[in-house]
Image (cartoon, rainbow, N blue to C red):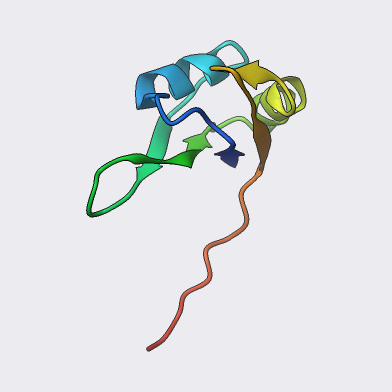
Length: 85
C-alpha cells in the first residue's frame, strides 16, 4: 500500500517518517519529497507498507495527529497519472 502523507514539518526526515509508520507494521520505504533546486522538503512524502491492513491502521491512527508541531494528513496515495508531452 502506498500512503500519501502531507502537512509534514519541513524538518521531518525520511527516517522520522519511517519511524512514525513502523509502529503499525512493516515499512518498505519512506520518502520525503524535496525541491529539485533547493533540496528543501516540500512538506509531504510517501510511505510504502506491504500489508494493506497495517497500512490502513497506520492511516487511521496518524491522520489528523500532531507530528513536529503540525497536524498531518495521511491517506491512500492515488495512482500516478502518466503525462505525455
